[in-house]
Each structure stands twice: as structure tokens, then as C-alpha cells.
Length: 434
Image (tube, rainbow, N blue to C red; front, top):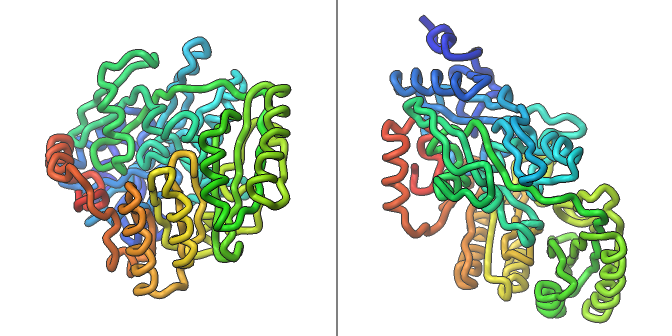
């Protein structure tokens, strides 16, 4: 009996093809459970047969992290894409892990709400069309993906208040609750966020929501390197209360950076703050300042409207760049930007929270890429942060330390042993070879 027939009693299963590869590794089958119960049956069968499982939504971030040691089954979550609950009075929503973020935002907007998570991978993924499906809710949770607006609400980890998940042996469990003040199991939800699917398979996610703003404006200007520290410091501590402060740099800007601030709230209040901020940036930055009405309340997620390459370019057009997440204390952001620019990175991210993304083109040699990553990591660590290589071609991944030094590694290994003693969930993908 083949593996398809062997697992067919749990859920829909089909043979895998080359387009189902996980970082160059072809699985035997793709299984698509439509519920938590089917996910449980599938994982129970995989555990009993020692089959390695990698979870996938639309695959927009499937190559992030290290390549898994082995892959037998790709567990596709896209059939679990329903909006389970939208409690407008409590400002929470529960949805299946396979729900595309863009679709979730559209549904929530009907009630005047939003999940404040910027989809950095919009337009990427194995089935992305012209509009692009980008990330699923489960994928955003698995990678703890957050964009510029994390300055306002925190990261994805801060917005998750509950999860329903299945352990590697098929056991179904819940963590957290459905109200913001319910803290039972709260830390377990946070533990699963950012674990890259190596601890359990999350099937439903409950998140905290925020009201859609009446008005949303972006104010941006180009700033020389010598003025960048003063501009960023003024924006971050500004009484104008921007909900995001983004900085963009790259070879195309010739040593300059583009700084953007997002202002949201009531229309009258926002328009007054836009005027004040425009005058302030003109004085501090010394160059032209542009302000634009975002209209639908959806802020830009990267690169403002500058003539620079996006940090997460389309895979079909730009190949597979080396993608890095790098952090520093807020006062260190200008130096981190300068180091990245000097080593040929294109960079974008939240200067208001100290988390930025940098990319280096695929055509760069392995030695040059590794040297640039090492330089960026040394700077970020000295400035109180860290640098993680999220994605790269196999040759670069083999030559670079993707995760860098990670405190508490022994504790993390004990957690992995508790959740997945057989190491069937994406073995080797996460920090320390977990």
C-alpha cells in the first residue's frame, strides 16, 4: 500500500510534485485536512509511522529558516480557512489557520475592525495571482511576522490571545481564551508563535482586533545619512503619535534614506497632525516632504513610494535573495542602516520598534553574502539586537549561521522534546537544529 492510500483515511491526500518542494526537498504526499479533527487523525498516523511533516499555507514563507532534515508529508492548511467568529463587541476574531490575511482583513473591515499585522509577503506564494494571496493567518503566526505598525500594537505574538492546535501525536488542545483579559494558557499561545511549525500544528487562531481609522495618511521625505539620527529620534518621541515610523535605504538611494511616518485617527485630527509633521520634517530633513492620503485606511507596508526595490521582492522576478531580519535598540537604527547600506543591502523596516528587514540579491557570491551578514550581525549585536537569516539559496544557507547566538537554547530543546519527542514536525528547521 502506498503512502497516499495509507493516509487517505485521515483526510484528502495526493501525491506530491516538484511544485510541492520544501526548500529543495520533495515530499511524498500533500495532505489537506479540512478540520482540527482531520489534522489530529493525520498527525496520529504520521507519528505512528515516523513520517516527517511540514506545515504549509500558501507557501509564501515556506523557505524561511533552515531546510528541514527530511519531509515525507506536506500538511496543507488552506482548507481550514473559515472565519469562525467575529465578536465585534469584544474586538476579537477566530479564524482557521489557512485563512489568507488579505481575506481576513476584508471580512473584518465589514465590521469596522482590523488585525494590525502588515503582510510583508503579499504577492508571494505558490498560487499567488496578480493580486497575490500572500500570508495565511497560520503562516503569520508561525513566523511571528509583523511590519511597521508593530510600533503601535506590538508584533503578531502580542495580538494572539488563543489558539487551537494539534500536537505531534494527534492530541487536540487549546491555549488562551477568547477575551483579551483571559490569561489562562496565554504564554503557550506565545510559545507557538514564531516556532515555525516545529512544536505543533495550529488549526485555529483567536486574535485581538483594533478599529479601522477614519483617516490614514503617510508623510515621507528623503534624508541624508548625517541627518537621519535626528529625524528618527524626533519622530519616535513625537507628540504627534505616529502609528508607524519606517526607514528605507538601499544602493538606489546613494547613501540617503527615505523616512515615512503613518498618522491615523479622526479625519480632522489627522489632517492637523499631517500639517505639523510636514513642517517638522521639512525643517529637520532639509528636503521636500510628501504627504499622501491612504484613503481606505490601509497603510503601506514597505518602501513607501520611493524608487527603491522592495525588501521582499517577487520570487519570479528577483530570484531568491538573501533575506535578513535585523534588530537594534532605537538609538542604534541609524548606525544599523549605515552598516547595511555599506554592505549592499536594501533595507526597510520599523525604526519605531527597531526591527528591520534587509535583502541582498541572489547574484552576489556566497563569500560576499556571508561577509555582509556577519558584518550586519556584529553591528546589531553590539547595538543590543540580533540578526537572523530568514531565507537564502542553499549555498548561502550552508555557509552561514542562520540564527546566530540564541540564549536559552537548552530550555528550547526541552520544550521541543516535550511537544514533539519523535521530531516529526519540520525537523531541523528551527534554531539549534530543532
